[in-house]
Length: 409
Image 1 (cartoon, rainbow, N blue to C red):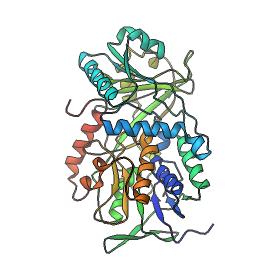
Image 2: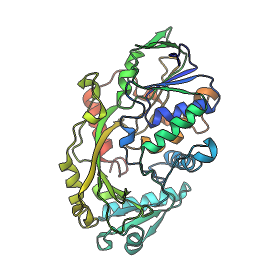
Image 3: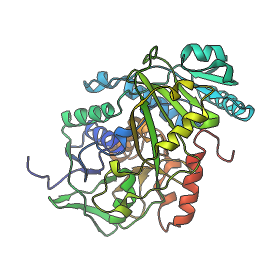
């Protein structure tokens, strides 16, 4: 097919955020939706995600959005005619210290008020749900029966893509956006080496490259990419896919079944801020520097509760880049200074799992004039304008290292 010259909307980025909003814009009837990526489609951070969906969140808004995301995944085949495999394993929140026991108790209390199905369980009950745990090391545990995971994260991206293309969207990889034509403070076109696409709507969903795209439109966003790593073991006897996801709060480590073994990752105490734009146009996500020693430290930190992580060889070590914001919240909505320029970013470690909900709501906002859930708390305006890089980096590190704790703890 010839390269498009016009589009109702152009989405920049084909990760989970970009493909989700592309699908939803096409579902809502836009005649021509084009998604572009400078890399192969769905090839950067999103396929390297952990694939975890978490119904219990830090506030009522995100708890509501998490529920919408899980429902979208579970009903995907019914709604779009495309298979999307997932595992409804439930999850456990685990604490080994008194302070983190109180954090879990508060999260359970709050989430129950917001309508989430979650309850405290004994250490023995936790071990029955996730037999790789050692009950003797668990001080407090809570169970969320509705949590799910996607075994291979790329399957979510493939489902978004297939469904979007069935609805008429064009998704094009290996085409960088080299300019955004803005006249009279409004988007007019997207420029690429393959040609210019006339459009009044551009959605910046470029992941770790979101600021570079925003700058093409004459604006900026306080978003800091941050490395995150995980590992997958070789198969372990007795491990089954339906065993619960485990989040060990005091160590900031998560574990879930994967490929017959276990996947684990952790939020580093001294994380690595990493701006891919500083490494040239040829940088790809697989070039992100990884450090398996950090994952070994994470495994060591939970040795008394998940000892098996020390006994099994690793089959995969992978990493990607989270987009962290100073306040730990997503960036979703219009940029006031540039009419027609929208942003979907600020994953803060949860973008993959929220993408089914946020893509849908942003599409509603663009097509209908407002989303069915108020997203004012995620307004890009709060992060636009002059950015103090040192302050941004410090705040982003704080948000990353406090992922499992309430702000200010």
